Image 1: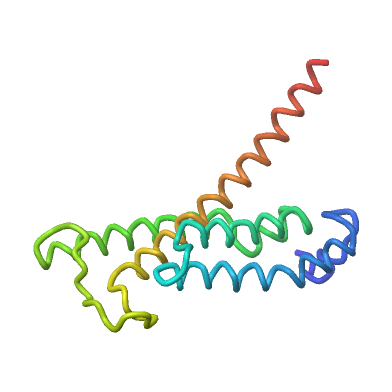
Image 2 (image 1 turned 135 degrees about the vertical axis):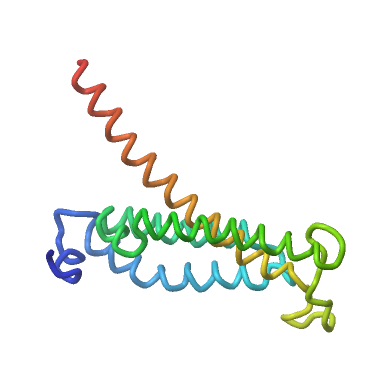
Length: 160
């Protein structure tokens, strides 16, 4: 298996070195911003879905700039499936733990002080679970569509 640095510098895969350099710089900012939106979604506009979309866009930009092989090293199909399933199970567990107080999705953690980070009970936990689910799902959908699109285009080319 070739070294990842060699694959990143390989100009036959992905886009030009200018795009790769910009993506290297911007990817950290995209991931930090997506995590911020997920974690502070109960205090500011945003939340699990919006932050998950931003994080998935980071993986998509990585795929477009460096090629599918580099992106799959960062999150392969198995890792995406594990994150997807973990997000769903965590969200379900939070909902079911509400039954300890009497009904589904009851806030079992308490309220806290207003405008503090830990002030919304189970909402931040739900945001994290939804963020994991959305990130993994959208990246998997993007990969599936890119693979399927190439398959369909090769079939169309054969018919002509």
